[in-house]
Length: 474
Ligand code: 4AD
Ligand code: MG
Image 1 (tube, rainbow, N blue to C red):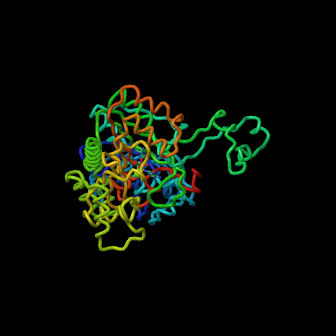
Image 2 (image 1 turned 30 degrees about the vertical axis):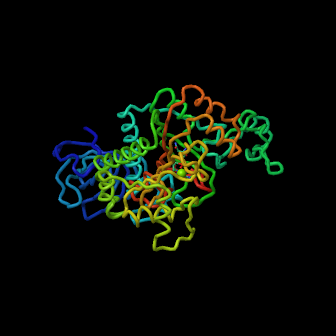
Image 3 (image 1 turned 90 degrees about the horizontal axis):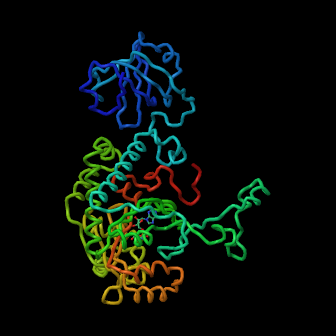
């Protein structure tokens, strides 16, 4: 007996063989003396239809109602061509064993349930078609990410999760606290052991072994240290932002992919971002066909064509100044008025990609220095920096990147301007003291990529266990 994974075509070459399937019951129908059980093992979208006559071992158990939706089963049977139109093969059951019964309260019955409802059932939602497909495509995107960078000579670097530095300088960090054992014993509520804010200040003495520490907002600065030693590197790991925003594109914990290229400028950075996106999109179109067809039918009509275009066409590039011009000329009233120097809001970003450039990814470059982070390289005009954002339809900003300021004097000046302490960035400044090189990189929000690639409209459905204000239960 060999195991068979599901799949619409899989098994056609094994007709007549005795095979086993182990999985979870999606539906069960009793029709006179035949029972149809659809079993899914998560390997693909398709269920294995198992057809059981009364002579099958275990038939009585099933007929008596002991197997219901959600139960786990192990089935042996003969693979035969299917009479039905939904699948090409089915399993004629020889023997069925209940591995784990499912209580009738199982909340995900056949009827379609909303994604809002499923967010309250984060432990069971992977058993649905949508979340199974998202999980498999997310996995394929992660694999393709490593494949792309590895094939192009990048070295993967793990950047720390606990850090003292604030890469973006925006103060949107969660701080790390240490629960002191004595206070843990003293109270049965661990919450009481967390240091209390005194006069609005946290008592740092109880933080990371006596020092302030935070959850990282970005691994970029750490990636830069390795890029200035190993040349091209990338990180791929969780990052955290304490922005209290309840939108469909923000999470408090998200995964970020951050390549850092040595001996490279902004043009190299944009070329890398474009090649990367085209590579991973092509990868899922070729390797996740069944799941992509599902998204195309049920989640976002036309997504396959849209992604095929992204994989083939050149992306639009324009400067921030030109983008502002374009928005000022737009025949549309924005909620946030536009003027040179303002940060682009999601309504502006969406107008640019969706309306002005008909759904094509757009890279905007050379932003005003005052709206961007301290590490970005000053352009010759003195007003802008060598920054770039890649915007895509429906998601908005998918990528944020820049050429880094590699000149010590300009970087120090910038830290002073922003009243950031040179002492706390001493090691970062050292990289400019000892063999500085032009370098550039970007950060891509992995869940936003999953949204873009699947058409899932809420970022909470693009990660297995979303962390947003007020949600950290599972
Ligand atoms: O634009 P950001 O803040 O850039 C950086 O962190 C740089 N240090 C990256 C670099 O150059 N190495 O964030 C990068 C990307 C955004 O474009 C967005 O896709 C994603 O990270 N992102 C978020 N995704 C989900 N939830 C949030 N709260 C996010 N904040 C940023
Ligand atoms: Mg950004």
